[in-house]
Length: 114
Image (cartoon, rainbow, N blue to C red; front, side):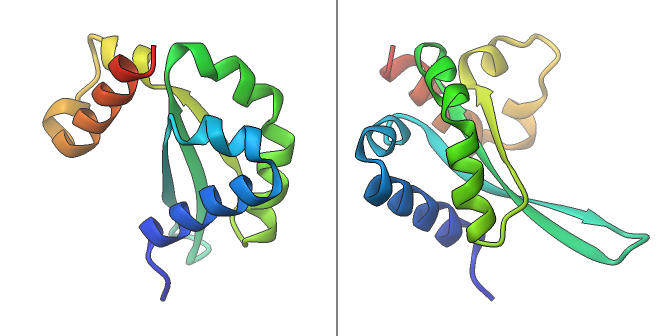
């Protein structure tokens, strides 16, 4: 089975090959494949989550249909764009305690690419 990290990297490479400008934007983001399972149906679905800084969220939202087409061609369900800066500032977020590595990567993205 193909790893989720590998799928995320391949998604970014394909976007870079098809649309270099959009690929350049993705270099400033954290791309992750997330699994969603429905126990009743015994199915697993995978989708792309793009964590990006404040200044890139609007540009990526404009190109979301293109990103979704690429993801669907790879067998993934959807593309979700999340604002990493807002996620880090959320006082109710437990991300730092539950997944410190992801929190550090998002912190780096939010502060480095302003």
